[in-house]
Amino acid sequence: MLVNSKSMLADAAKNGYGVASFNFNSFEDCKGIVEAAVSKRSPVILMATSTTVRYIGLHTVVGMVGGMAKSAEVPVCLHLDHATDMQLIFDCIEAGFSSVMIDASREEYCRNIELTRRVVEKAKDFDCTVEGELGKIGGHEDDFIPDGSELTIPQAVPRFVAETGLDALAIAIGTVHGFYTSDPQIDFPRLEAIRVLTDVPLVLHGGTGLTTEEFQKCIAMGMSKINVGTEIKHVFSQALRNAITRLGDEMDPRRYLEIATNDCREIVMKKMQIFGCAGKAEGSKV
Image 1 (cartoon, helix red, strand yellow):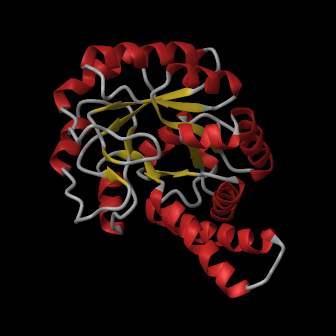
Image 2 (cartoon, one colour):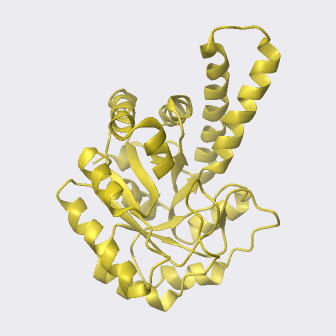
Image 3 (cartoon, one colour):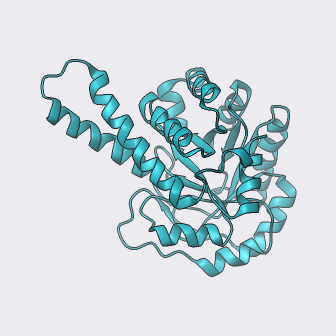
């Protein structure tokens, strides 16, 4: 079933687990993610970046995920990730996305509040949840390249949450998008300081490359939505390369793609176990 993320994140916060959120780029990796959620009886958030929406097509994305969600029998949320184009955000809300992220973190604080509030006001009419970002999360994700990494200032959070009315908040605590070139330096005291200042669900971006212990510590300290993107891309592309080598002259593309889908499903199931959301589908239903 296609739902927004409100009940998912509320149940995660109440019961101390993280909702698994994965970027997809095609039918096959999306299928693998949903199959993993069904197998693990887990709620799941499927995240499309702006480039994925442009590549697949807005209404095709909504129809594809909506069709998968209808037969999945676990809560599935379709989320627009790291969007900076207000028109695209509004188009996605109107087309049927059940959650969107407005990333105005490169704007001045008051402008970030203003833009995030505008999206929240629009989304209310469509039962769509809204994620915002305070602080700048480093790294590179598709066509989104932050201008450096600026950690979230805890004291700035309460006003931001109150004046925007958002449903979830992405914070910068030292993680980055993409593969890490050195060990991640997560600022756990900063996370703790932010958590005590707000009850809004917190979101961890830059999950690829974190250890099981780091994931679980973030969740124990209050992260309710855990994003993983680059690792899925890597697994999918590597599986295709290996399949082409192994299958040689095979002409049916589905043979190659099925292998990549299966590999994505396996890594997603492992992440769901780590995040603690396996078996939590019932509590996340609306």
